Length: 237
Image (cartoon, rainbow, N blue to C red; front, side, top):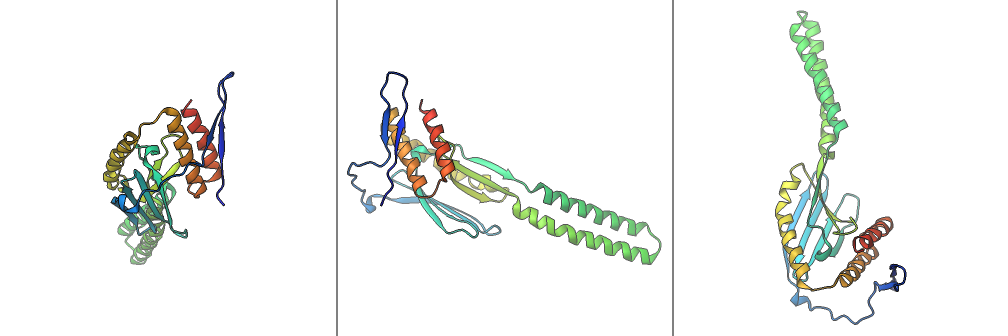
């Protein structure tokens, strides 16, 4: 059984409240599969982190998302390009503590190695060399952990509501690698928004239906859905 959801929008005093039905009762004729063409497809993989993201555009003005994350089931869904923010946000997540620890241990190793060259006693030289090797080896592990946790995340969000629709996880050069996809996204969103002429009220209705659909499919959490719904309504005031 499908869940029905309605929304009442309060209007200024003296005006009737607008009622939006997010689950349309009007019969919809589905487009024939042969009429919808897929492509181009952009794939982003990070074997070190076990992340895989596949983004495919289609001629029905949708972006099909396929995401695989460690210890999570494969997720596939589609988003309406009319409501995607063309400003892809790239965030650099740097594991500062790991890098600092690795640098500190490496510095101790370099100091120990430097002392061995200034000592005349061969026994102390051997001890200093062993300490330098130990510090260098110890610096390797936090360095590898920091390398694994340092990444670039390119996020796709709603044009209203600031809800995250998809993310690309990659290395520090991920933002540069994703630029061809971002360029194609900008072009496709412009085409999608001009394909159908709508009033402000019709655009709000469709945006709220799309927002509800993504929540109903589990793409958006309950808290994100409620917070973003309020921001969408405020943006259309």
